[in-house]
Image 1 (tube, rainbow, N blue to C red):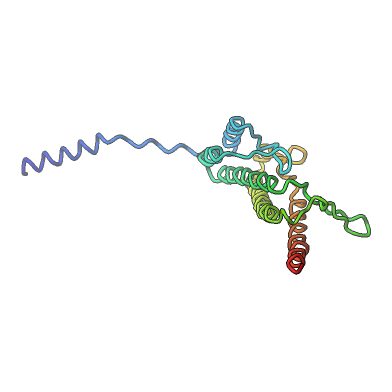
Image 2 (image 1 turned 90 degrees about the horizontal axis):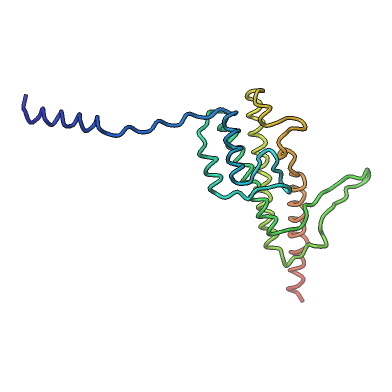
Length: 210
């Protein structure tokens, strides 16, 4: 065999052998380990995923917090949990932004036995603030959709294995996010939409005619 060819082969083998080995991928965390990691990250950012609730204790999570959560190595079930946590935070972000644009209290509607009574900050509604109110409606809807998705994901984790119940909580120990006032958010969106379309649009048309 050609001597130069032998040298080339040996040199090539030595180069390959001397290549630094890639670090091993971190093993995925199970649900229990992922919960502990979430608690660690929460503590770092002043959050608490078991006590957060829309229109109550919320976190306007910085992107680095969400990135850190999404970077947690997961297994099948813990991946669902991590996704639920991200949806919770993004729901809270949207709600907080909506409140900044339209700081009025959420509306509600109750049935008194004979008729429905609307409890809304109608006296604080002003068509001059239509743009902010319409933008807040979009954010409220995003918040509501993400909140529902988060709750569905948490249910999916618990349905996968009842041993996960203690980590998410049931009954009085349930994660507070479950009782977020999504009905009020939905009613607020509907009332604002009706006011913008039926009242402000007509008012704008009448103002133009004057």
